[in-house]
Length: 606
Ligand SMILES: *[C@@H]1O[C@H](CO)[C@@H](O)[C@H](O)[C@H]1NC(C)=O
Ligand SMILES: *[C@@H]1O[C@H](CO)[C@@H](O)[C@H](O)[C@H]1NC(C)=O
Ligand SMILES: *[C@@H]1O[C@H](CO)[C@@H](O)[C@H](O)[C@H]1NC(C)=O
Ligand SMILES: *[C@@H]1O[C@H](CO)[C@@H](O)[C@H](O)[C@H]1NC(C)=O
Ligand SMILES: *[C@@H]1O[C@H](CO)[C@@H](O)[C@H](O)[C@H]1NC(C)=O
Ligand SMILES: *[C@@H]1O[C@H](CO)[C@@H](O)[C@H](O)[C@H]1NC(C)=O
Image (cartoon, rainbow, N blue to C red; front, side, top):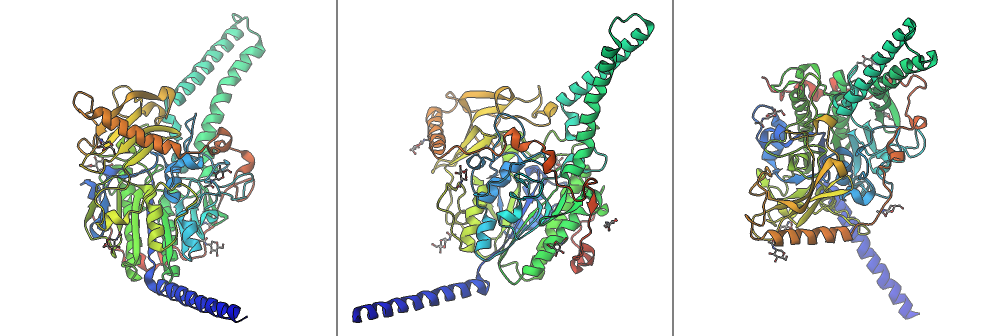
């Protein structure tokens, strides 16, 4: 009895101590200790488009300000050179291939329809979910592109609300070229499109000729055949033209407020940037007194390009430059709000781009609508070339990062996951492989060499290249096992609007094409056994890293099966059937009546 009594006394003391400690801990944490996070993701911004990365003709003073008050990451890499897998990896800290978020066998490496079934699987855990569980307010404003529904038009199984975001305002898919009213599809520039168009025209002209001959009595074909031929050409041509150029706008260019469709299609030209910005500013105001995570994912600077009137025609690089400058302005407005709320010291700010500039994005008139990747080779959609995966990245965290820090070691966008969780005091999941590494030791100067001895570069499910950073020395090697086949004499796949990942799309290299990108960042002078005595050893070391990575992979169901990516009519989101056309103007404040809008002085005069 006595023993039991003393035990329970001891237990209760222990409990009291634990309770005291947890209360103390939560109190100190809620006492302004836990940082806030504001993460910006720009769409398709090239590393050569930003002032602090060397561009002297585009004005990005606000991004440059983050770098000068914090750090610039000059070798920050996305997990794939295309949006959907890159964003999946960003949010989960894992290679897309681990979650079925990497395509194989076809070239839909992103979700092309809101009415598709693929998406970020429910058992994948984003940092938003873990922060929400730890008591953070979480919001996503802008682009998601990680799926929407599984079976019906509104089961929302892949919706951001299901992946840890309390608040979502934006598009579940992305901005497409077709989202601009009357714009042509992105496929009009491709060879396949031009060929099918020419074939249709030729067929139509030939059937007209056959009809004339039939009328003249010199054609022995039956009337039926002649009419069938005559009908076939336009029937093949018109639907594809109409569908891809016009209907896509209603199908995909949609805005949601949490689970409600509020605009179909959305209005790009006038108000989209301020409209999204207003949501982020409101979120900051409503949540400034508790820990929060704001993920502001721009629809810019992807096509369709759009800008409010005061940015139109202002830059020196046409509509593309106008878009970069307006995006930078919006970043500045968020920073000003953070300052105004007195949160600068305690807010971790990060900005990056989901992949490099899209080189093939050129209008039929020849105007460049894609980004610029500076000295780096290749761009969006290509496997392992630097231009597609090395993205302009800046961050600011006054508590531990000295102003003007420059990190040129290889880092990955997947590193944001453990970094954010560690700073927030939340545990990183132990039940799965996490490929990201905490950035803080590098940023705070406690480490000089990256923790990523190896980084693997994928194109869909194809392992195209691997990066090797030996623990000593200054070299960073990259071995390409395959490289995209470009249009003759160019540095991109213009005739297909982007490059594919396997088979006839690529050159295979055995032994791999090897570069030391620390010395040769433009990947123009391959290392060979002749000019690099350690060639065999380097290649063997890289193979070792690749093999170790391969051993950690398990096969999972692909979210990119054709079944999952293609349009399912019954899953089409529609705000008022059968019109599917609406724009519910929200009742919450728009940017016009937010005070900060009037104070704006950051708009650069040209
Ligand atoms: C700045 O960006 C523009 C637009 O992408 C590009 O055309 C130009 O070459 C860049 N300038 C430099 C110095 O990189
Ligand atoms: C860096 O090292 C210092 C001193 O050892 C330590 O107090 C600090 O927590 C470390 N910071 C990081 C981010 O590793
Ligand atoms: C290859 O890896 C071994 C073991 O890590 C290391 O000792 C050696 O220096 C590496 N060789 C090269 C050329 O990086
Ligand atoms: C998620 O579920 C799929 C299918 O059941 C499985 O293959 C995968 O390993 C699971 N992933 C995690 C992280 O648990
Ligand atoms: C929404 O607002 C815009 C601009 O203020 C206006 O042009 C449009 O007619 C409004 N739509 C509705 C449905 O009220
Ligand atoms: C979004 O929907 C919520 C209800 O879920 C509503 O209270 C709010 O006003 C709406 N906000 C916007 C910006 O449409």
